[in-house]
Amino acid sequence: MKRRLVVIPTYNEASNIVSLLEQIFAAVYGCEVLVVDDGSPDSTAAICRALQDRFPHLHVIERHHKSGIGSAYRAGFAWGLERGFNEIIEMDADGSHQVKDLVRMIDFKSENPNVGLVIGSRWIRGGATENWSINRIMLSRFANRYVRFMLGMGVHDATSGFRIYSADALRTVDLNRITGGGGGI
Image (cartoon, rainbow, N blue to C red; front, side, top):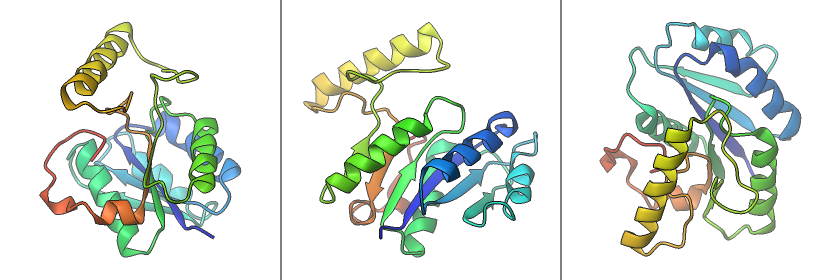
């Protein structure tokens, strides 16, 4: 069986994190979750630590200052690779990524084991945005069209922070050399 790790960066997600973790552990059999908290003043990390008795596959990295989402993902990827996970998933805690879609992505990855990257796209048929302002939607649509045109990529959502990476794919990237602050590596 594949070992899957869901990496969730957090900053002030106390109001969302319990529900998200309950949904993940109820819907995704055998996964582990790593919360990488950037010193949330709302006690997000403490809430997660308090849930570890209930969810023994919940892990928490507490960072003392806000270092950014990209840095949090890279720390989570390195943590997962060091511990032998086969697949590492990035997912936001703010409600913009749905667990039902995570399950669909995992099913797709399971049916296509040689695929190194699965992207949860907002901009394909069946994709959606939740909890987004019209400005954020327009910026994302424009940015993704620009990236597709300039780089000739067939990817509809290059800025998505909802992805499944195979460990083999992640090992081809030198995580220490990446300096960008965004969600995708």
